[in-house]
Image (cartoon, rainbow, N blue to C red; front, side):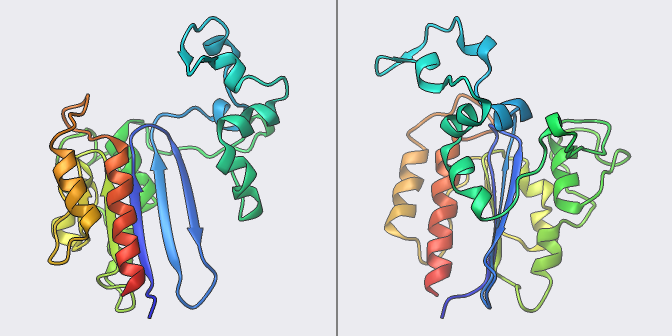
Length: 231
C-alpha cells in the first residue's frame, strides 16, 4: 500500500518555494527551498548584463547563445524549462514584482536561519533567532506539527545541504529525522544507492565547510521517497 509522507528538501543555491500535493487519498507533499536566486531571473530569464560580456563557454556554446532570447518569456523558459513548461499547468507561481505580485519576508534580519524559521513556522522571530548559530529552534515548524499527528507520525523527513537544518527543525524535540550537512543515510535497510552515496560523499569534497553539494541532498531525498512509496 502506498503511504502518505511529507519530505522537505533544502538546498542552498536559490530562493524559491514550491509546494506540490497530489489531490487523492494518499497525499504526498514535497517542499523545496532554494537559496539565492533573484526574482528577476525567475520571471524574466537571464540578465543581459551578466551574460553579454561573459567569455565562459560550455561545450562550445556561449552563455549568451545558450540562454539569451529577446522575449522575457522565452528567456525564462530556456533558463528554467521544467518550471515554465510544466509547473503552470499544475499550479500557480507567485512573486512577479513587475506586476506588483509580491511575496515578502516579514523578518528584519534577512539571512538564512531567520528566513527558514519564517518559512517553516509561518512567523518571524526577530527576538530569539538573530544568527545562523546552531541553536535549537524554539518555534514549532510545520514539519513538527504534521509529525505530531497520528496520521503522519513517522512519515515526515527533511534533507538539507546546510548542516544547520537539524537545529532549525529542532530534530531533537520534533522527532523529525533530518539528513543534512555531510550526514550519511542511516537506517536498517539501506538501499544500494544509499550505500553508494554514503561512500561517494566522503570521497568528493565540498567547496564549503558546512554545506555539502546539492546533488547528494537530492539523491538521498529521492531514495527516501522511493522506499516510503514502496512500503
